[in-house]
Length: 296
Image (cartoon, rainbow, N blue to C red; front, side, top):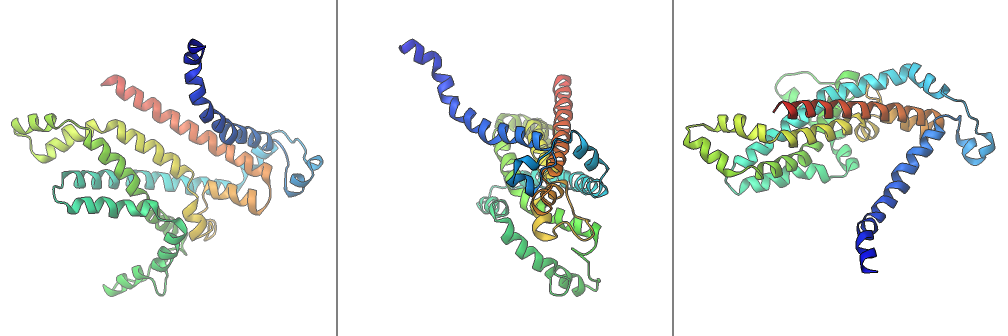
């Protein structure tokens, strides 16, 4: 009996996790995949007899939808500009805090991390006032130095940049903590040997710190890119995709079709297109990282 329990113990311990994974991840994905091949809407949700199988029609329609094309362009805009900025600022702030010896730098950790745990609705209210064209702080500061007002949320391109600024402010804290944890794991003996060889601080950072952080940078880049490909909260609470769909992301497009227009099959097809894109980008990054590791 004891031998039996010892052999089955690992399966017993991981069983709850596997059960939750199947119930809340695998099953919903499978159901969404089935719905994407149907014309399910609100009426079909109440009466399944009204749901019909339509094959790949939803996929063909969503791929040709100009609004979906605009959502893809906006999402790529967010990813191309937002992801490098998040990694750059998170790493830079982590390095500065790690190099600091005063106790004030421990306070900075809390200050920079606070936006990450702040509710997005509360953040949106504050930033809406900051971006207000008539009463906002940003335009007031620009006017104080003789510069004209900026249409922070009323011009499509500027609105996208405004949302990126908000998301950047919110995302730095968590990634900064990851980088600080990785920095704390670098052996001090490396720096002591470099100092004996006469290396200055910049040389220590570029020749020791950054190379030793490559796995942390890879992890942050993958998680950040996946998060920005699913960019939803900021455009949802700040602009609702406007003006003129200028801030509409793919995730918000899926939400609007699913929960505002009640086209569940169409929204499910859009979600699987996004799912395939995320898988493809992740596989490319994993491949690039593997090649880099093999070369070193």
